[in-house]
Amino acid sequence: MSEAARLLLETAQRGELHHAILCYGPSAQALRDVSVGIAKTLNCLNGTQGDDCTACQRIERRIHPDVHFIEVAGERKMISVEQIREIVAAASLRPFEGRNKIFIIDPAHAISVGGSNSLLKTLEEPARDTTFILLTRSPDLLLPTIRSRCQMIFVGGEPEENDALAASIAAGLTRFSDNRDSAALLGLASLIASQDDVSDAVALLGKVLCDAVAGRLPLSIERERLLAAADATTAAIRWLNVNADARMLVEQALAELVV
Image (tube, rainbow, N blue to C red; front, side):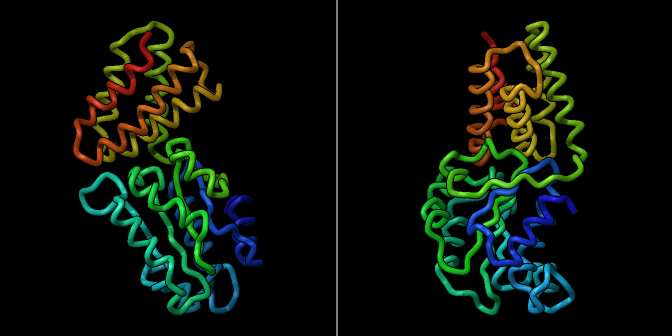
């Protein structure tokens, strides 16, 4: 367990956790683990950070009535406004049997624009004993209005398999930066569109572009163009929700890099 995760659980155990937290970091599994750990800590019958009590067991099995997991459903590519409206309604109710109601949104960058707007007021003025935990590897892809209502916490963890994809994205961007080779961007669009989880791959592209803006990936591309391309990836993720052509969307986002 990382130091950040340990401190989060200690804060939750003291009852001092912010009502809306945005956990981000390189490992999706580490983010999920800490969110479940928080849920256990807030509702453990023995007051621990998670043990073998019935409440902790039910949270682990995802059957606790006060711990809700909001994820991309079925064949959809986004968390819909209907899903968010359901949790907004549920958030106004008192806990059924636990001390706290917890809503874990994973990944938060997959919330649709309508869903984000529906969630804003609840994040700002939640009901008592209610905690929202938003998880994402790419916080820059969330609406600023969502980020501003959450306490952002970096959760460390070992990078995952798709770091190989991140490396390929960085290599493609570097090739374009060095040679202005448009074929590099077309190849990058094809690579991203071929991934099993296209939405996550586009989010990863957005993260790499944001890394370049922050100087963590040295590219000889104007900052304004990098920002425009990163913004375009956010729009692309939303359009994927209506089954738009993934490759075309990625090509349009990368076209922002071309002078």
